[in-house]
Length: 118
Image: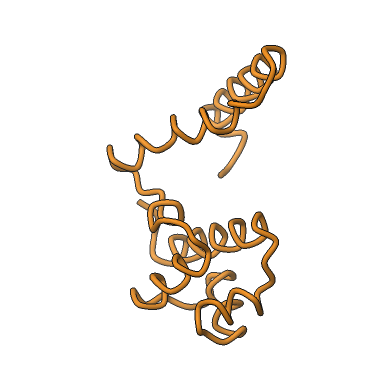
């Protein structure tokens, strides 16, 4: 498990990544979650700890599960990844799937060699 500061930075980065993938501004997320824009900014930058009620508001506003943001190293969380991969490739051609698989294998090897940080 990450230390406390790294944990909050990782959570913040995931919130930001999800927000951006949905094309939502910080102001829009703040409005949907009934929070202020500075609170969203502080969370995304890992500058503040997130209260459980705030976390729930952010999850609801982004329409994601807590697990989508936390991604804990637990069996239940790990079971979600195959579903994500399946969803990712469901509209791909054979050659696209082959390319994605090759890239994934290379990334995995790099991570295990310590050349790539996540």
